[in-house]
Image 1 (cartoon, rainbow, N blue to C red):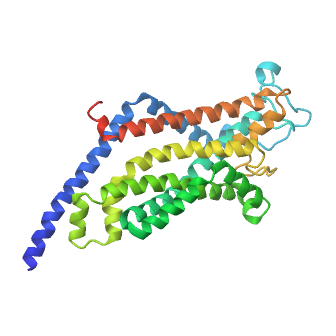
Image 2 (cartoon, rainbow, N blue to C red; image 1 turned 180 degrees about the vertical axis):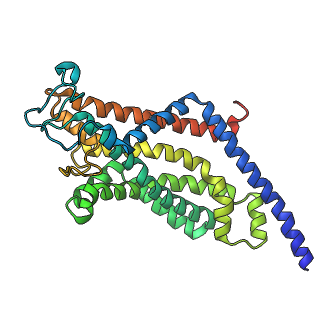
Image 3 (cartoon, rainbow, N blue to C red; image 1 turned 180 degrees about the horizontal axis):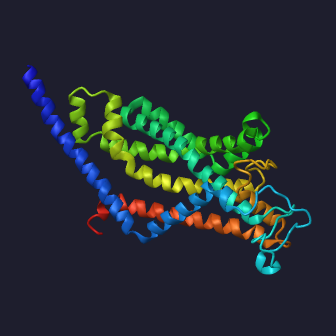
Length: 324
């Protein structure tokens, strides 16, 4: 009896190892195809540049973004005034525009990346449970997903931030925490739907049945066998979630309900590109360079993530291997 059990375990372990090696090879091939995509490489370099600027903003910014220079309000760019202290000029209260754009990169990228972890955690958990267990669990979780999906994202952000802006949670990190929560509460539905579809396809594979036949627990099967083989569309979705979050923050900032304004010279997130768009709209006639740089930065970062997402979609598509 013991010998038969040992033989069965060996017979199931061999295809499992082969599946793991095949999976590793697929990921390696996908990475090689991604590097061959010029648009994706340019996008990754662009995102890396903005991340470098965000991380080292205190060293790259010529001034503290909260410093006010009396008598220097609405000063034009250096090519108009010849004043090299303010390359992009100053805003309505004499703060350096370039410094605020640099620190705005930190805020906008944080809004894009930090909620991503929560979004993926919620979406993948809901999708995994719905797809794997099926039946009533699937029905309840997917109906909940449909309800959340039906609510307009931007309208939900506006309502939630407006209602809770003056509460304790709305004041944490100048409103950052509230913005993170608002983004996570409605953005996870796309990930959940993608994950459920992948799980429904993967859970019927031979290596999953083999793991189930030797008594592997549901948790082990989901984490060791189903999850690694369901990540491809999730990675692609994540590449598009980040710019969507950056754009949402920019819209909210432009409407005046984004990050709370602060005068703290030591603030980690003193401003954002969305807030600068609002300042630039008000001062459009007096100082146009308050508006143009953040608008260009938002457009470039969104285009970069679009290139990365398209490249990931092509690289992770097994059908592309024969065409590359």
